[in-house]
Image 1 (spheres, rainbow, N blue to C red):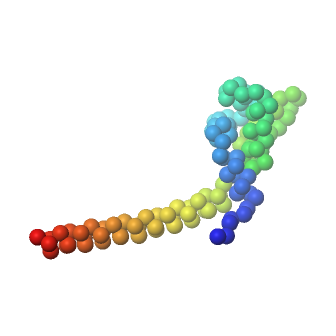
Image 2 (image 1 turned 90 degrees about the vertical axis):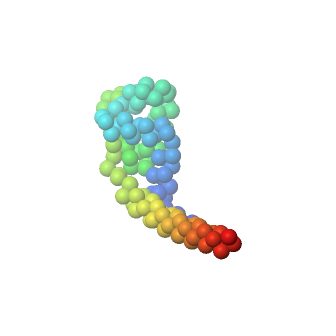
Image 3 (image 1 turned 135 degrees about the vertical axis):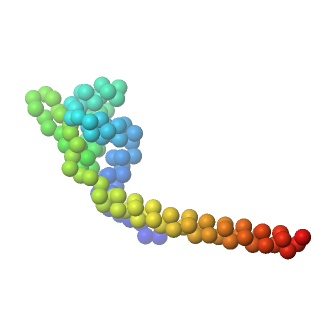
Length: 120
């Protein structure tokens, strides 16, 4: 089986795999925030939040800017277009397989009904 290797996808999916990081993205979607504000909101240490923000920043989801002693975070420009295309491709494949399975089940039901009438 050929594995799909793409560093960009790996970084994106790794960043999104954590509930805290997804929460940070939701929060930053509402307004920019400092790392301290994010750490307080998620009941984390500054070091822990810095690590989460770093992962999001490496994936392109977050941009940080340091002014004085405050590092402010905002959403980055990366929008997951390639990942959405990749996911949609697999969604279509699974939908087609389930459609085929539905057809098989319906055919078996019809055969069962026909066989049941024939034995009466």
